[in-house]
Amino acid sequence: MYHTYILRSIGHPDRIYIGFSSVDMKIRLKRHNEGSTPATSRYRPWELIWHGTFPDKQKALGFEEYLKSGSGRAFLHKRLI
Image (cartoon, rainbow, N blue to C red; front, side):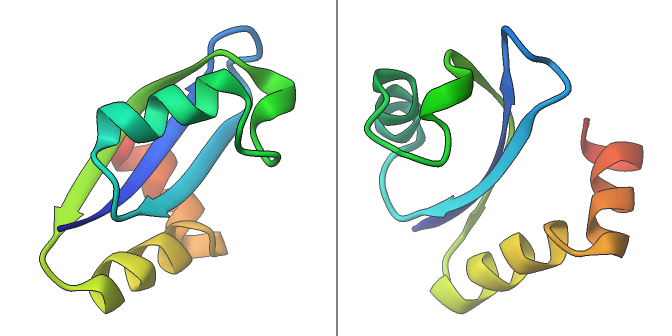
């Protein structure tokens, strides 16, 4: 299974992170909060606010790419967070 997910910084709630992983979400969130992911280490700790599970890697990556686009960000703020 593959996951597309959205994290929000607890200390800086205006900061969100959109990611993709094939790792269990509990483990992935733990890694973000341990600081082992350079892109998110500065705004730790993080909370998981949404995730979707996909059976196909390309669909999960495609949805991550969409969420990072302009229209995807609008969808994210209107429907997911």
